Image (cartoon, rainbow, N blue to C red; front, side):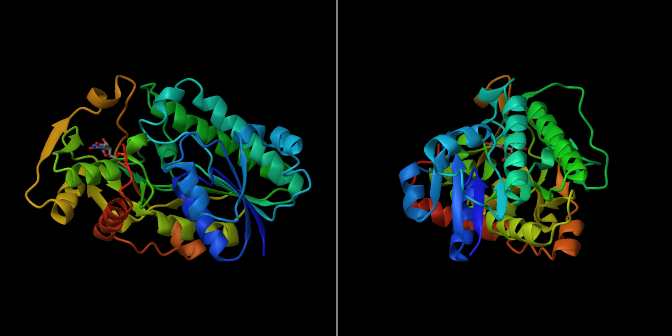
Length: 331
Ligand code: UDP
């Protein structure tokens, strides 16, 4: 049994990771400020029993840890850092503060991992590519910072700065860290609150409403089921090379958003309709569309032995079943 800390462990991806770690018999410690947990806290506690929870910002972990006497003597074998503002709409209220939150969180977790001698998996974002080359994003490519300053750019630039700082830190002191860049994660428990498209489309289809396709729907993404992402996180912890970054995204699921909308309609509301609109009309002027993006996942597949398996239709069906079964309000 390992002692494992998951920051953001009550978030969407974090909760699936914690579930898997608990099933494998580990002792799991979660640090989460519970600001953007996708389902009610009481449900998470019920679904993830035997988890030690410290409720605070990750940046404050040492201070809270010592004052609550929860963590001061706790050794960790592994730390997964997922705590972060998330979602194209979810990040907007944090405009101007994202840089500080991401960087302070990264330093806090870096130092905690160093002091405890724990291996660290740092969850970054595919946004750092700025769209790669015609949407294809490979770890070997240069990152491009767009001219247009948006909140999305602040998020991407902060994550990139944290990655660079982590890599250089691991080069100058005895510390082991691996970076993960997820691409459009989807699955049960994801909430439409952050603006994520799949729970929004499914909820709209279930309500018999037209699906709100932003722009002309030709923007390209590759959706990746959260269970495949969790597989990748565990493999990264086990086999990832120090200071290396790995894309986790399923290239087989590459599609245009309009095609995603049509697939959702096929599964849930055949004959249903779509409506084209500007995302700003829902989320306000700070909302920004990302460039097309889909992964070159060959590095994770070859080096980590990662095998993403779940297709788009199965992901839609899984989320639909979850939302039907749980009747949760996914705003
Ligand atoms: N999108 C959409 N309708 C919505 C919400 C999102 O067409 O109601 C589009 C959005 O413009 C983007 C894609 O779906 O091109 C994926 O959006 P999401 O917010 O899930 O992730 P992103 O890749 O933009 O960070």
